[in-house]
Amino acid sequence: MATLFQRRRNKATHVERVREQKHEGFLRYAGFRWAKISGALCLLIIVSYALVDVTPRHNGGSWYGYTLGTIGALLILWLTALGYRKRRMTSDYWSLKAWTSAHVYLGLSLIVIGTWHTGFQLGWNVHTLAWVLMMLVILSGLYGVIVYATLPQALSNNREQMTQMQMLEAIRAFDRQLHTAAQPLSPADTAPVLAALDEDPFAGNMVTRLTGRYPRCATAAALRALQSRRGGDAEIEKVVGLLQQKEAALTRLRKHLRIRALLEIWLYVHVPLTFALIAALSAHIISVFFYW
Image (cartoon, rainbow, N blue to C red; front, side, top):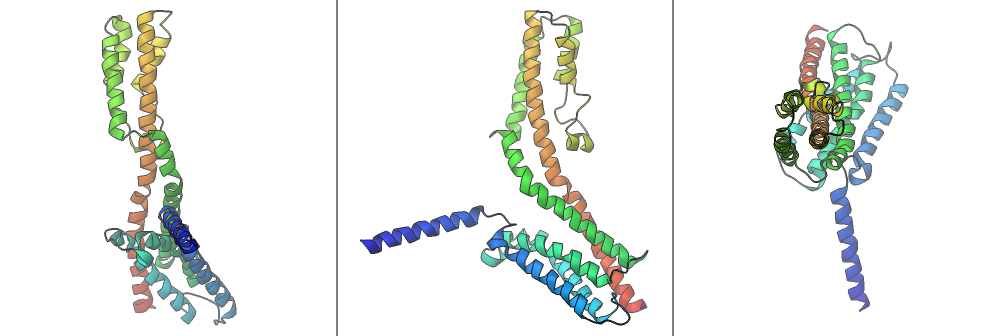
């Protein structure tokens, strides 16, 4: 009996551990394994930099600089493989979560590897350009980590179990009701409502979508216009109520689009910067081996 109880207890513990692993984010993967590895690597470089004697001073052309440069270049090439890795399914140590965790923390270690490789000698040349591009790639990657750690929950909370299509259909439903409710109104009162009905919910450029500000919103303009004229008129009151509901639905949809844009925009910066970094890194390596 005691053995059966122990087996059930062990099984329950195992199930709980599996659940924890499934809900474990890539930043916390395996108890911050890659954060510890990255931290240890950075500490080793900092300590060795202080202990190793390079004459006349540390620089990218010394044996120590070449060592760090080789490590950094190989690491950059490996980090770019994450896009390819996302198309393949594996588990355990080389699961996508493990790979992404390594990508983030080893990418951060490039701050130390790349900077200490230069020996803190920066100037107006292709070598510094490669370092600057590397730092920009890392900063854009940090932005991606932050938004992916915080915004998905905000996206879920805003949706309230509604899909984008359902939010759009809710807006169209209010438009149909507004079209009917506005029929008895005067032409002057109907005009702003018709403008609101013709409004494209997806209108606006990238800046508008990222800021979530729509100063030319026809629905908001119609609401302001009719609120100033209602004066107890039941028909106008009904239209005002529908406009308020449509405005709330538009706000939800636009917030949804804004959060999605914030989640996606960093890739339009991070990926091109990565290719620019590889090009500058290639020029850096070629100039070192063929012209120095």
